[in-house]
Amino acid sequence: MTETSIVSYAEMAVKIRAHCLRMTHRGRSGHVGSMLSMADILAVLYTGILSVDPFNPGWEDRDRFILSKGHGGAAVYAALAERGFFPREWLDTYYLDNGKLSGHISHHVPGVEFSTGSLGHGLPVAVGMAIAARHAGAGHRVICLVSDGDCNEGSTWEAVMMAAQHGLDNLTVIVDYNRVQALGKMEDVIEMEPFAGKLKDFGWAVREINGHDYAEIESNLLELPFEQGRPSWVLARTVKGKGVSWMEGTVACHYGAVSDEQLIQALKELGVEA
Amino acid sequence: MRTAFNEEILKIAEKDSRVFMVLSDIGYGEIEPFAARFPERYFNCGVAEQNMTGVACGLALEGNMAVTYSIANFPTLRCLEQIRNDVCYHKANVKIVIIGGGMAYGPLGVSHHSTEDIAIMRALPEMIVLAPADRIEARAAVHAMMEHEGPVYYRCGYKKEPDIHKCSIDFRIGRSIEVRSGTDITLIGTGTVTYRVCQAADLLASRGISARVISMHTVKPLDREAVLQAAEETGALVTVEEHNICGGLGSAAAQVLAEAGAGVPLRMVALPDTYIHEVGTHDWLLDRYGFSPRSIADTAGKLIGAGV
Image 1 (cartoon, rainbow over the protein chains, first blue to last red):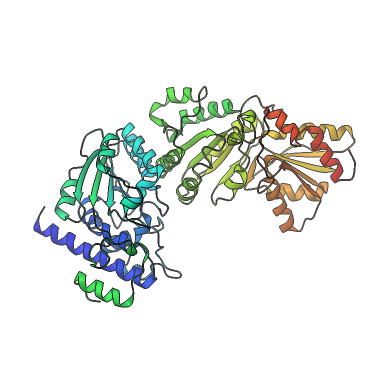
Image 2: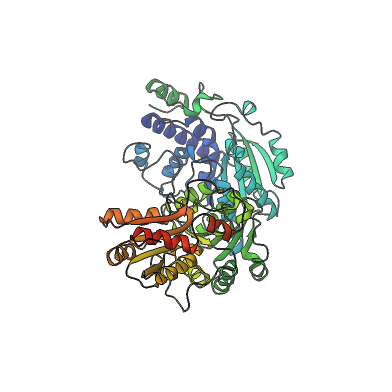
């Protein structure tokens, strides 16, 4: 990891966060806290990890990236726009009448692999894609980013079991482990701990990382798969609303829209001109 | 019929390496030849229908054709949102096959009665809904389904259903088959109950009533032309389906007639809007709920004022 790549990750993350704040402010829409918590992971994925081609989004050998927490789709849209998959101006239409970008992530947008929005859908499809890749002898990877709320869904665990059964080491799950759900903190809803232990017991190769530390994110993702013959699980500890002081760790930032004053203040905290 | 299905899918898989079978621990006694012949394209997901459907979708989005297969409501209602959001929205080349449509699993009870499936599946954009009447249609329908690019729902029978066709058929999705000609009334059946419709037509013939019989093996897209032609030429219609009276074949036909302004007398022989908790064999339940040939014939006779 070089100083240059850290700087580029940080710059990308700021751009993603600023876009998300502006988009949700303009659309008077929610889920900004969920976007901010995974912004650093997305910055590393789209800057240094995923093998994708903005000029050929359907490139056969691309890495498949599925965002299972589709409510955070604006953050992926922001990353895709910054990578040149579509004009940045499209971001200005997010959530608006006749807009290009819907609130939950859509495969009708260039660079988006799969539409989600109802939790628990991403991982089973990722398992199918990983099986298909292995069957075809293809070298690309399948990476699925899930929320901790995603892991409340039974379908996620159905897929967890099947991925282990078939030793899908071309499959990686990254959990945006911010421990804040729609109605409350995880300990008050469904406590997942010992989270890493559960996945180890289910046959996955598990690593816990700081989901806001670029070096840690990058170095671990560069070592995929963690073990031959096992799917990889990255438990990325994050903070909901990361980067905006009054949002961090709050339940309110799951649904709450950003006011005019809050936008100015939030962008200031990010060091971005309003 | 399920044996016919499995034999045909195996034949297709021999020629087309894109065919995968994705199961949820159902298929004992039928699926073994596929599993033995193509172990690399056979996946038993365990008792996990949501994952089964998602995995099938993932396989299909990578250029394959994935068949999910289970009994009654397991591969449809248990994973309906996966079918809607993952399969249909993405136009994934997934084929959803149920064994034991209607009340084929009779005494197993309500959990195993697939009696709302047609209504639910036909409400999904992109979905084709097939319900073959006999083994001859069933075999042809497998090929039509696999040749179609996109989601298909295939309501298969169970076993030992009588054949209604005596010769080879021209099976095309969305194109019904006239099983017998007639001029006084048209009986339209879908699925394996259609053989009882043919028997009802025989009874009507013995009463001097000439009944046309149509096998509507595709409920979506419905063969509009056949329905309107039957209305125009025979002046009255009876739809027969082993399905809740809400939202199935009868509803689809009524919609066609109403939109076309073809207001002919219509009766729907279907299951009442309730759960059939009485215990009995498939045939016993069918007789009890108005699907005996005599009951169907009586319904038709009354409709055209010919008495019973």
